[in-house]
Image (cartoon, rainbow, N blue to C red):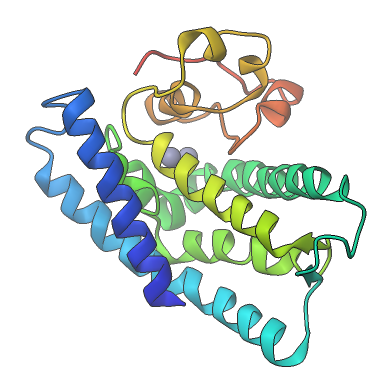
Length: 226
Ligand SMILES: [Zn+2]
Ligand SMILES: [Zn+2]
C-alpha cells in the first residue's frame, strides 16, 4: 500500500507539474532545491499513509472489517452522494482543527514548519509533511470507514478528490474559472486561490475542502491570485 501511495503521488504530482510547465512556463524555475525537499518529505509521508490504509484494506478483504460495501444496492442510492459529502466534511473538520492547533508556535516548529518551508509551494508539495503531521492526516479516512458506511466506488472518488485537490491547491496557479472561484458557491469551496493565501499569511484560511469552519470561526481572509 505504501508503494501504491508513493507511485500515486509521483504520477499525479508529476502530471500536474508537467501541466504547470505548459500552462505557466517558468513558474518553478530556480526551485529545484525546494522541489527535491518536497519530493523527499512526500515520499516519507507516502510510507506513513500506506500503513493504516494497508491494515484497513487487509482487514476489509480478509475479515470483513469496516463498513465498506460493494453492492451498490446494499443501501439506498441517495446514500452515495450523502456519504461522499460526509467524508469530505468530516475530513475537512478534522483537518481544520488539527491545522489550527499546528499553528500554535511550539507545535508549528515541531510538526508543521516542514510544510510551510515551501515558499511558494509547488505541485510536488501535496504530501510535503513532517512525519508527525503525516500521521494526523493518514488516520482520517481509515478511521472513517469503521464509522460511516461507504460504497467502494465512492471511497475511490473521495481518495481521488483528496489527491487532486491536495496537488491543485499547492501548484501555484488556479485551474478553476474565475467565475466559479468568485461565485457564491466559490465562497464555500477551497481551491488554490484560498490555500495560496494560507501559505502567504499563515494564520488564516486553515480549511481543506470547504470554507465553512473558516467563515464560522472568523479565520477566512478571502482569496489571493496565485
Ligand atoms: Zn498547504
Ligand atoms: Zn499551515
